[in-house]
Amino acid sequence: MNAQKIGVVGGGLMGHGIAYLFAAAGHAIGVFEPSPEIRASLPKRLRAIADLFGDDPALLKAISVHDQLGPAVAGASLVFEAAPEKLPLKQKIFADLESVVAPDTILASNSSAIPSTEIARHLQHRERVIGTHFWNPPHLVPLVEVIENEKTSGDVLRRTMTLLRDAGKTPVHVRRDVPGFVGNRLQHALKREAIALVAAGVCDAETIDIVVKEGPGARMAVLGPMEQSDLVGLDLTLDIADVLYADLDRTAGPHPFLRQKVKDGKLGMKTGEGFRSWTTETAGSVRERLSRFLVGQAKNRRKSSA
Ligand SMILES: NC(=O)c1ccc[n+]([C@@H]2O[C@H](COP(=O)([O-])OP(=O)(O)OC[C@H]3O[C@@H](n4cnc5c(N)ncnc54)[C@H](O)[C@@H]3O)[C@@H](O)[C@H]2O)c1
Image (cartoon, rainbow, N blue to C red; front, side):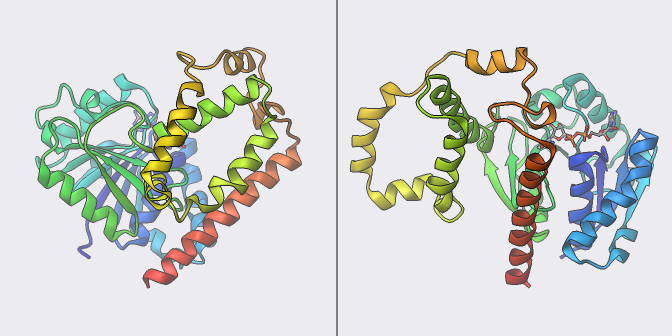
């Protein structure tokens, strides 16, 4: 692997994890973070990731934190933008980046939903802009959706995929800049049906979670929906689709049941009630269970690739 300089714009939830994973892969990282409080919290948050993996904290010396954009991204071969999800803000960041980086520096946005086509619309070198959608937490979840937009060059796509693969991620090439890319479209298709089933009184929210975790979810980490269809046969898949699809939820836009929950201030764990009811302890144990699972998986992956 070629050690490179990587820039990260925004040292929040996603930015600090992205910085860590590339430092752990042997690169030099410059993070631009405008908030003094968040800058001050970065060493502790980065150290917590090193502790999670049992890594030598000396690797954190490869990460420098800056209050200005220019020094953070100087000499970078690729910059990951992980700033708030607002189009005008991202457009301004990319315009500023274009004025301080080399012409061939790749500019990648971690936006969850804003097409990089829009972010790059007013730039001079649009061929070097690409979407890289990491999943939270980016140092633990392997997938990164690499989204080509209508101007992205083949060379930029290849270099981005290689950098991510060499850092131990699982990059996938998304050929069109569609809203939600691939992962969120699939995730929200499932959520849409789950919400409609609860709203119709077919089962309660807890039952939905049990069905997913103990049923299809129990095999999903090793069997994707396309290979599962091929496994059971497309003739059976078609027979089921013929009976079922006309009955699936087709509410246009978010379901009224979800809108009402939000209107009533039932926002989930942070308010004590969402689809299900939560105490500080039960919410804490869900977070703990998730973290333990993801860390275990990430450690196993590291072991098997060592
Ligand atoms: N949180 C998730 O689960 C998740 C998952 C995938 C993608 N994303 C996307 O990643 C991006 C960042 O999300 P996050 O959850 O890390 O948000 P965050 O609020 O935790 O972090 C954003 C950081 O950007 C900083 N910032 C504000 N203005 C800035 C500017 N002008 N230049 C540089 N930095 C600036 C903020 O101070 C903050 O530290 C968003 O586009 C989000 O949609 C988030």
